[in-house]
Length: 267
Image (tube, rainbow, N blue to C red; front, side, top):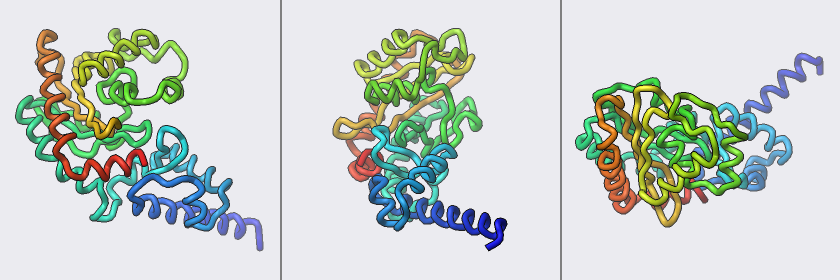
């Protein structure tokens, strides 16, 4: 076989493996181990690991935060079969998202945690439209946003170190926490109060409030509302955030598919 033909054949084989892999993850109701994927697809585990890493870097695959299993990435979230738990969870959660929006009149979003990635599952825009902010995969600073700090507060310390890297943490505004001690105080407060307040930590002029969605000790995601900081006085932060906590707690206790979502997200 000529060199260019061999190269084309290898590329075709890699693409075929990638497509079969993504289809497998879309059909799986729980995360899959490297061994399970390799056995199902009948491929070499070493080559598969490199493929998984490449797909993870591009957002097609996510790794469960302990590193042992894989699930879909943000870019695959809309490719589930109709019976998948994610579709049920989105449908059953919408009334609670709508309730939150009606109470606050601000942009509200339902966010799931895929490993250490934050994925917007649904959003209702309010007085301040944030279409560019609420992309499918959130890229706002993990240490300076409501959803990011809720995620960090739910992770083991070793994984937090891996996500954040070294100090100082990147400074996006004058209010962004840039040391681990400062950030750890925020994370402790989230665990104690059940909500997060992020006032101008990621972007100047924006305040975000968040509350975790939890099931049997696992944080699966969060509800977040974002507004212009000039529209909500600092003295009202705690009462505003408490509204999110109440709705998030009600959602966590009422949505039937949350049981299946727990197994899909955490195994």
